[in-house]
Image (cartoon, rainbow over all chains, first blue to last red; front, top):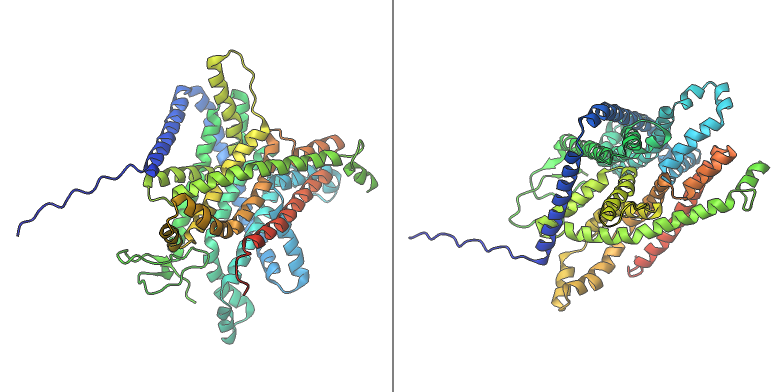
Amino acid sequence: MTYTAAPPPLARKWTRARLAGNVLLTLWLAAGLALAYFMIAQYEADFYARYLPKFADGFLVTVQIVVLSVVIGALISLPIAFGRLSKNLLASVPSYAFVYFFRGTPLIAQTFLVYYGAGQFRPELQDIGLWWFFRDPFNCVVFTFALNTAAYQAEILRGAVQNVPRSQSEAAESLGMPRWLILWKIILPQALIVALRPYGNEIVLMIKGSAIASIVTVLDIMGETRRAFSRTFDFQTYIWAAIIYLVMVEILRRLWDVLEARLTRHLKRDTATDDTSAPGQPAKMQREPGEPPVDRTAMPN
Amino acid sequence: MDEKLTLLSFGAQGWGDELAHGVLITISLALASLPIGLIIGFFLALAKKSDEPSLRRAAEIYTTIFRGLPELLTLFIVFYGVQIMFRRIALLFVENLQFEVNSFVAGMIALSIVFSSYASEAFLSAFRGIPAGQYEGGNALGLTRVQTMRFIILPQLIKLTLPALSNLWLVLLKDTALVSVIGLTDIMRMAGIAARVTKEPFLFFGTACLLYLILAMVSSIALSGIEKWANRGETPR
């Protein structure tokens, strides 16, 4: 038996899609190169010596704003989420109003309302001894952002809790567990896995939203950028800000993927027999016969 | 209380007409950005679901960049970047040209870019919800690819994307507030001016928030009407 070489693979045709894709990729490449050339051509050691430390400061301020707001917001979101879930109108109506207000109005309007509004009520705030807090724009920003993200996080939490099948809490009840224990041991651990992805998105939104702090004179990344630009009129400042934000968001996204893979590793199955998939994720309709089994997170119902 | 109402009234004494003008600007900016964002978003989704890797990659670069950048930064980059670019180009031909980008146009470009990168994801997941049999059916009937898209896929796609697009519209409406920072006289800017002149920031920014809430409510009502229209073919259960 003689072996003949396999026929060479067919050359890929230059379809219209391939042409368009290549042209567009070339355009991206050209844009990237032009940007790099622009940055190198304008390179001044002076600029970097002066503004690099400022950007570092701005970065720290942005991180502080985001971390503080998200953590405080998470704490505030707990009572609101359970208020929304409650059958008691006295709890559900105010929490619904809170969520509706903070999700229905622009973050910038809320920030202005707190920052400039606090200035108007200065005598009253001084009387009750809160003026020191609202005097600082940083505090105002964290205050507003925390309330804003609390509204979004409350909705995430509520959706996730409602996603846990009723049978779970019924089973726990039949075991005689008290309600708080059911919540803590049964509902929340399952809900938080579902909520993980939306929480990640919310943090990304917060990183992006934190740029608004610069408008009320907080010197975060955006604030430092705007200040540097107003002094130098050097467009590089904005490019650097864009790079920093993109890297931040991208790192968080990767980190979140790792975290999710780690936290859902007990739900992974290699067998293809199971066809349920995690709620909220687009279910893969059908597997091709030759396709290797995919890792899927599946909620055991 | 009375004097606050006067401040909000229409006419020479109040800021009502200025705020109403701001509402008009906000609505027109959002309405102007919507179609551009939808069209770019649709083609991005087509590119992302294409078999051609280079096309997918190009579209993914676009969405990664513009979904990762703060909207405010995108706005500034468009506003100053376009200005600098045009000035550079214009300087090749004429000397000493004063050129300024209209804040409405800059806002429109920036908001459509941001909207399109989110809309592409919405379209993409809707495309995944349309079974391959629909394309094959169109093919079997002898329809061209464009005809299949136009008569078979699009009507189903609209129905499937509407909920996500409704959300994006509400986000777009809120994002227009950012354009006030580069000088567009929308609700936020008018409220800011009124607050500075009258020294009543709480009243005016509160009113601005209320106006955005009203816009959101009106949109929700309109959108649920559209959704009902899009689902009219569904058999009642």
